[in-house]
Amino acid sequence: MLSMFSGRKLVIATMHGKEKVIAPLLEQALGVTCIVPESFNTDLLGTFTGEKEREEDPLATARKKCLLAMEATGCDMGIANEGSFGPHPSLYFIGADDELVIFIDQKNNLEIIAREISTETNFSYKEIAQEKELMEFAGQVMFPSHGLILRKSRQEQTDIVKGITDMPTLLDTYQTMAAKYPMVGVETDMRAMYNPTRMKVIEIATKKLIEKIQTACPACQMPGFSITDAKTGLPCDLCGSPTRSVLAYIYQCTHCGFSEEKHYPHNKQTEDPMYCDHCNP
Image (cartoon, rainbow, N blue to C red; front, side):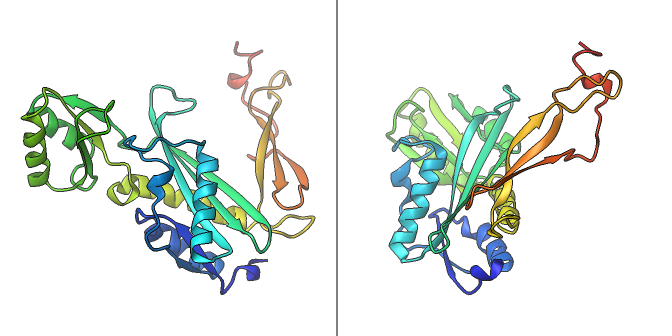
């Protein structure tokens, strides 16, 4: 199955150094040769600092990014990543890094997607009026191993200095801005090459993607047979009532559409009564 990729070129749609974690994984797992397009400006599709708003959702943006890189290099196979930052979708008061990775193989009519949502992120912004506050913020977000951005304010897209990774530059930039504005915005630089924590999440998402690519469909033997949905209803061990715990995962092929239900994915056929709405309302 993986022989369909071996020896081919694969373009990584990035200008922010993501190939450092993505390329070694793909080259080892798929036997491809990874390349990065020259003068490829992914900022045209959106920036974290708001100079260019992302016009489409993360998946559509990642897909467009991938296709543009493939067109620019003449590759028929590519990968792209798109990250989003904000409240966790279920742990609402905790920040999260939501990384989406898409793999496209036009030769074999394949599109495979993986996603990793992690609470491991230093994503943060604060408006400060004193150098002491700047130092406190820098210490909390792992500066200087993680880059910082100083700006006039989050609401304005002027006077922004990105990619600050050393203390002299941070202090000089802050003093220049503090002389002009009563408050200065400081935020984490979420571009991958300035954020090792984010890079680790991208690596995890890429490993998930590879696992999907390496899983063949039982019907057509094409890559990408993976979980697309979950069915709840694992019965309570005490009363037998359906609980909210997962009873089965639905697997589906991205190529031929074949689907299969696999029961008891966690190797247990009943659930503890503490998770039962009937026994433990």
